[in-house]
Length: 358
Length: 251
Image 1: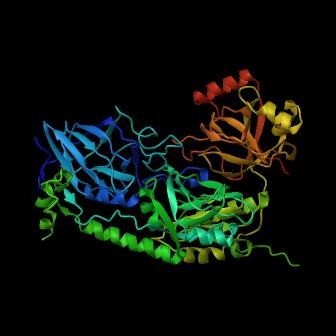
Image 2 (image 1 turned 180 degrees about the vertical axis):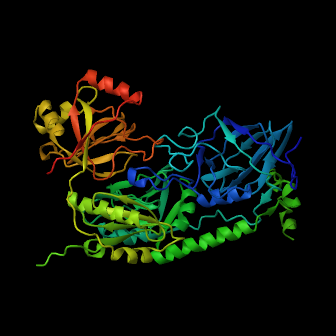
């Protein structure tokens, strides 16, 4: 038996589970985040690449804020039991292998596919991004904690038992309704990093020397290996302070760039602490946070200053683009069903790819 | 000089940009109970009538971080709405209620007590007595869910953080650093000096609200022996212990 072909509208039974065979480097349940409790020290968490989460959810017919699996560097392998799972991965290039009844089918990112009960799904290494989101039709109905299903790794709550998945875990999924044909995103968003993250200087811009600010806004900084969901430490020219790195602790937003005494900036990401005591030179704008979340160690970053108004407009433009993208979702075309990704990977069609562009 | 009975926000604070999803309202640069009371007062006023787009606020020692959704409001419009916010009369900074935290000092519960006492040139009993004599203010919560920054510590107990932070601080550790004290609600890394342990639970994600303390609460520590500490720990585990609260006495 092969996975359900595009266009099949047979109902999907309820009450399935995903049994984790191999969890991948760090796979967590995430949604758009836990908001409203930061005053009590509860971090917002949520997907590092919220655009990938929203598009992946749209691909399987979910509400954009539904909980899904965030994978980092590589995806998990799991067995589907109790029903057919409709799945879609967004945010990275990847090869997904579905083994069912002795047959093996491969799928790329940015399209939905069905994995029947008994199938083993193997999500491979991520390319073009350090993180991706695997959405399941119906969402992952783990118990919400403080209004969100996001995993808080530091707090040890939310998601699946407050931690990253391990082999042997079983996650329920609830295909609630007939999802219709499998959808694809005809023109997936580009993952290519333009090399620049836009920032709004401040809130402690005045804690830095004028030379430090000029350096920060012109020099390249490398993403180091000290990068996780809390933040990523950068390496580059040290930034100097007027008086020192320490401030009387104040609030932190996702994207805040704090600079400890070493002068090396740290970009704070979704699992950041709610307050901190280091001067913050700037904040990455929200439209560029998905790109920041995708960065891998070794990447080079430059920072460009924009105004708050320009940042807000960039975010609204991004929202219009996401809405437009979701509007282009369409049933999977025949061309995609012949599994271009797998053919390309085996280098069988490298000379004839242009034929598909006609 | 004429003293106004009420004050507008814009006269007392400045707005600082924090990207396009937040901004800070900064009231000053120091740790001060009256400044902090003002921060919490503005947080309460915003919570009661949030301008369009405001999603939540985070009070800190001396500033309020206002989070907003740039799809539903702009910083300029929210700040304009807040600039004329009438803060009303300044109220006393004293707490309305004081939590009493039973605390076992020293030994394995407070592994830094002896070194801390030596560094201060005080006997350990004197460090405990001074720490337990204070009634502290919940300035803010953060760092960890339910970690409260409690101040001000007796100036005689003022020491910097440890040069090398611990990788693992056990939950319930009562710690001091500079003019602050606090309790680690969860196991975590930490650089404060551990002088004792309280079995009280400070954070429970299954409860709403999930933290024990509210802004402006008072806290004091009551020394207990190992038997009482163990008994309270067992009661907490059984869900049968709520720390006592006292009505605050006038300052």
